[in-house]
Image (cartoon, rainbow, N blue to C red; front, side, top):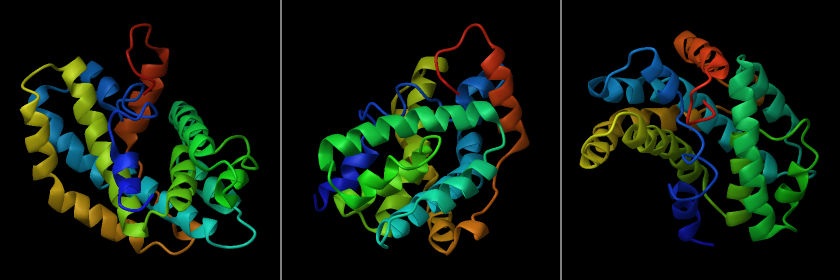
Length: 221
């Protein structure tokens, strides 16, 4: 796939992310978050969940390069660091979409085949690591993809939940570059599943639990 692989994974039109997921924005808006606080939310996510997910995806990518391919340790570590059941369920749903895409693009790749052995089902970062291996994506590119997807998911959801000038989204993402780069460096420094950072945020966890009970919602979480 060459240089197109990372671009494909980072494409907001890919129907495995922002169409169904707001990366915590919808619960935050329900709790009173206003549009002017979105940049702060982006920075907060880049220092918490984005680091954990990017590191997990890179660990999965590395696991895909060993024989036999075993995503179990990464999956288990990530599950333990995703304590809220609604967030695990959302990640599993998104992971299923990534797995489906991987089967379409590289059904016979060892990493894609190994995803079928992950129980109960691969979380999204694990599936992204496998797909990254199948597409020949480098570790840093994969980490940036996961981090960028966090940003574009929130900003895309903002256009539905807190409408405003779409150009604001571009400015927000560019302004977050230093934090994004730090998240990537931190993710790449993680060497084993047992050292995967547990960077969750209590308000994010509580928001996901509240969101699950909501009768009016647009996104999974």
